[in-house]
Image (tube, rainbow, N blue to C red; front, side, top):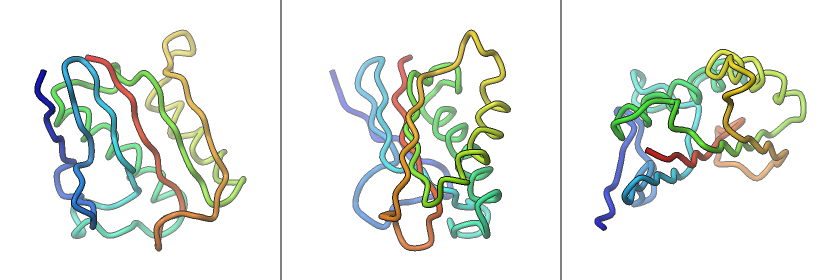
Length: 127
C-alpha cells in the first residue's frame, strides 16, 4: 500500500508535515486548527470563530481525501479553556446531528497549544 499526503486547501502547517496521511482505507490527521484559508491560513479571532473554522477545515480535509465527514471514526479535540467544550459541542451537533451515528470523541483541556491556537483537533477516518 502507498501512503498519500493530504492537505487542507489554503491551510498549511509551519512544519514539514501534511495535514493528514492516508494508507488504504485509513486516514490520520495531524493538528487541524481554526485557521481561515481565505486569510492566508491565519488563526480566526476568538474561540467561536476558531471552532467554526476548525470544523470547516475537518470538512475540507475529508473532501480533499475523497470522502466526507461520514468517514470520521474518531475526533480528538484539545481546548485551552474548559468553557470552550460547550463551543465545540455546538459545532459537533451541527456536523454530526444524528445521535445514533456520531464518531467517538475525546476532549482534552490543555494550555500547551501552538501560539495563537485556542483549540485544535485530530481526525481518524476510514474510507
